[in-house]
Length: 222
Image (cartoon, rainbow, N blue to C red):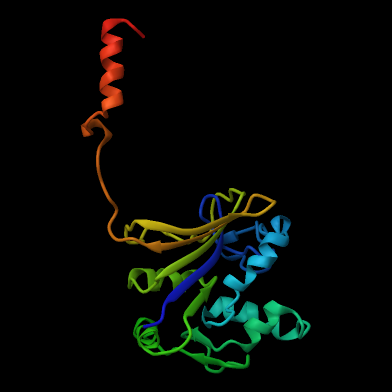
């Protein structure tokens, strides 16, 4: 069974909307598009093979597909990101598109959850969602996402579409890898780790050192 990996850029407050430019996604009066641009550096460039569909098949929502389709086929053929995205097999979720012009692209059909479940059960390359906020919410609800590549940029945007909306199922996450760019971007990979572990500091038993410290305080020696 192959993995489904979600790769996305987010702000410190979790917004993933329109990182690439002002016109990318201005829905809901979002006016801060392009917030990732100023933080790009060589570290991020070198990490791109982990989030650009390299050696994976892509899963894209309609909006992300249209943004990519209007840009990447027209980039220089030697551009490594263009090579990865143009060459990858692309599975597109849309209820309005009837045909796709970008090469190696096909529609998933009306039941996206069933289609992705079927793709995951097949042999082949891992599947990667890039952007595609609405699609991510649908696949999160169905517990189909196996890994998150989350690049956290040092900006606070206040509003916009978030990677984890209030409807998300609670889950613990385990950090697999992390790296910091020269501009303060955190490049992280997480995997779901089951239920959120709960406890209470108020009920925790004090450690031996804490017992000793309290005894000394009672004696007035510290």
